[in-house]
Length: 170
View 1 (tube, rainbow, N blue to C red):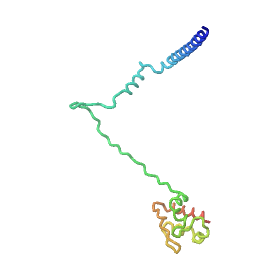
View 2 (view 1 turned 135 degrees about the vertical axis):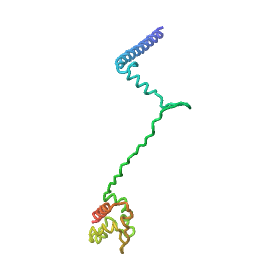
View 3 (view 1 turned 45 degrees about the vertical axis):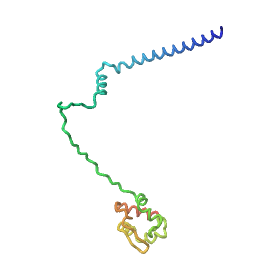
């Protein structure tokens, strides 16, 4: 009978602890309820307005023959901002337009970084190199299309790319 008594004692202890925890939760819930009732009450006008706003119908249904006022349609012109063109830097222009020919020497293009090939061109002056890059050039060594075939680039961007290539090849 002692085994039954020890089981009953343990069972009573577990039930007592569970009842105490449940009572503590109930007291805590009631305390929280008292603290928050001042904020949200069902009878407050703000609460009622919020409930009515959440459950209001999205639209109205009219049966044939019923009259209703419809607002006049309005046309709103959207003004789109002008696109702002940002100029690319010399390295950006080189990587996007010049790299295809001047990295591998395609069509007689001088390879960037090869000082021996660039020396006679640099001796002509930066203005001549820039003019040839902008207007195009056909010489004994090869062909340079105007602006490297990228007519969307500005003259300033092409000049920056020429400066970059000359600086990399000295």
